[in-house]
Length: 321
Image (cartoon, rainbow, N blue to C red; front, side, top):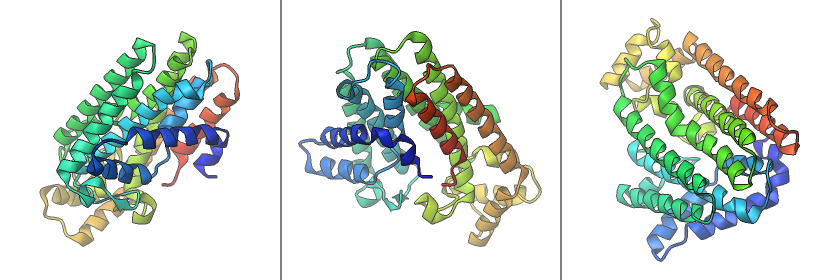
């Protein structure tokens, strides 16, 4: 089953969000317009706006007001991707050239900054000032997460706790904020807001662990970028952390981090990690977070969105690419 089928009832509202995103990235600079649209047209799951809309279903739902949360959330995600590609020196994303590849690092950085600024502009339409606090805190934590990832590159002595703190900031906090802000903007009661916030956090953690697993096991075509690119750039993810001391992995991993590994041994390293206990342990931890997310769903009031959240969480944590 395709992910979009799980929220097909939101199709018309997501079209509103898509049109609003196209308006949001418009500026008086032709170059900025072109770079922003290049990123927008690359598509994506739009899963964060989906979580905003579904969370809003637990309150007084109105697409005209909820879009003022869904759009900035997606803009922040887009901005983080542009900056990520500069940091990682990535040439492709989703099978297309990145902004930094088609233009240059400077254009990419300013495009990301512009999208961040537009996100702040949009959230001011939401009257609840606590929503502004949530969004600004999320942006701060996201930036800290990116810096920590730079600091932790090629550092094998980090702990699993270090990794979990990093992915909380890099990924989980934005998905958590999507759920929390959607609920806040629709006037949902405080107890339900908390369950949705925690649901988003747990789903985000499970989602990122699966992403890091897929970086090792998927093909270039499935990922839309080179398989193993995160590892080969020196990012120490959970499967690698768990497998780093295994005899089949350790010597190749050290050679890769020292820059002395051959292209053939790069593939041998990926293969060794694929079949390691580290991969099994990473999947187990992802499932623990998934179960925590599903437990939060059980606490939510009964409506159609509740089932959708459950199904999307299951899909995201079991996906193959």
